[in-house]
View 1: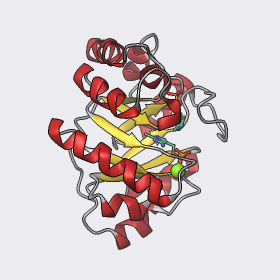
View 2 (view 1 turned 135 degrees about the horizontal axis):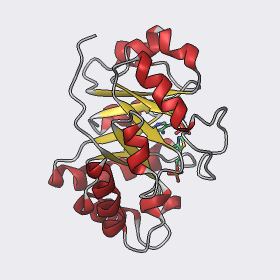
View 3 (view 1 turned 90 degrees about the horizontal axis):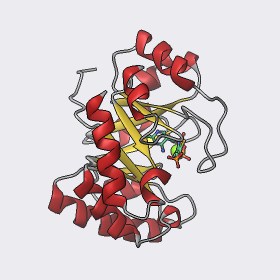
View 4 (view 1 turned 135 degrees about the vertical axis):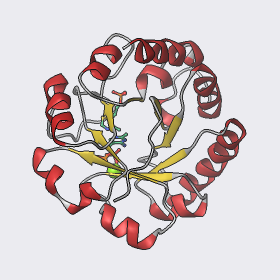
Amino acid sequence: MVKKEFPYRLYLVISEEACVHHAYLKVVEQAVKGGVDLVQLREKNSCTEAFLQKAILIKNLLDQYHVPLIINDHLEVAQKVEAFGIHVGTSDIPPTQIRKNWKKVNCLGYSIEDLQQLNTQETHVADYLGISPIFNTPTKTDTIIEWGLIGIETIRATTDKPLVAIGQMNAGNAQEVIKAGANCIAVVSAICAAQNPAKAAEHLRNEIEKA
Ligand SMILES: Cc1ncc(COP(=O)(O)OP(=O)(O)O)c(N)n1
Ligand SMILES: Cc1ncsc1CCOP(=O)(O)O
Ligand SMILES: [Mg+2]
């Protein structure tokens, strides 16, 4: 695997239902203005067609800001909208299959839920690893581990892949998470549930840059 650049520091993982105060497209735009540099569309309850329509709208918006779009789980949607990449976990299409079926994928993210995964071909072909979750979160409850800061340090010591920390990430813990070895912080609630998504993103970004 040729090691690719991963310059992203603040990653918004968005669904329409997570957006509390504003329409999701507004949240995306405000978040980007505040410092988000990578966005994942994660719609767990939409049919493929509805997911596709949302993905097209988000892609058109993000293209104006030159911010890449990652699609959660759905290879077909990712290819149709010519997304930058896809994020999958252990219950999804395996990364090796994605590589076979989507030759032009730019960015393939894979969730790490146990240490054994680190020695597998699936992890080897991924462009970044989502450490999932750092802390338990009501946003995703079907998780099997809580990695904590020790987990980040342990994974950092065994791989030089870019590490994305996700799960209850916020401005209060962003610095320590980066210091533990994460390259990037991914958030749902800290931005989607904020009264002011631009300010929330800016605050997070500042904390990341200070670390
Ligand atoms: C950046 C990032 N990391 C981890 C996940 C979780 O993916 P997965 O384990 O496939 O779970 P679902 O998101 O599909 O519920 C993620 N989406 N993004
Ligand atoms: C998608 C996902 N994967 C692991 S935790 C999580 C949800 C993170 O949500 P929040 O930032 O609200 O804790
Ligand atoms: Mg998944």
